[in-house]
Each structure stands twice: as C-alpha cells, then as structure tokens.
Length: 77
Image (cartoon, rainbow, N blue to C red):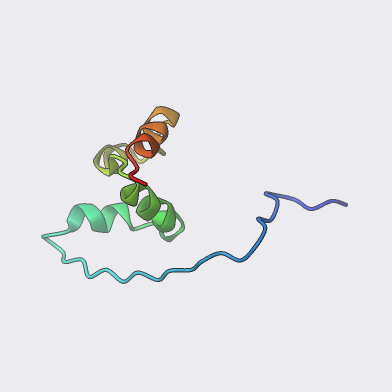
C-alpha cells in the first residue's frame, strides 16, 4: 500500500519559534484569530506576506486565490 497524504518535501525545514504576549482587552482580535493552534503558522506566514487578516478573522475562512496572489505580488525582494 502506498503512502497517504502529501508527499514529503526535500531537505530540512528551518524552524523559527515566535513568542507573543497578547493582552486581553487590547489584543482580543489577535487572541481570537490565533486561538486555533493548527492555523497559527499559516496565519503568521500570511501576515508577513501582507495578507488582509482582518477579513480572514471576520469570516473564519481561508484566503481566496486572488488574495494570496495579491499578497505575493506585494513582496519586496
């Protein structure tokens, strides 16, 4: 029986640990947005790439393909 799921990526990943101090009453929007541990890394990547996370927080959906392409087009190399 073959492997299930996504194929493994080649090489070793670079792991970066980030610690945030979020304050209730001041950072409630971020606390709600980051409440699901399995989505945190994806959300941080999106934020660093310039995605509009306020819309994502309001809808609880993933970004559209257009939003992803727009975020990539704004990257500065």
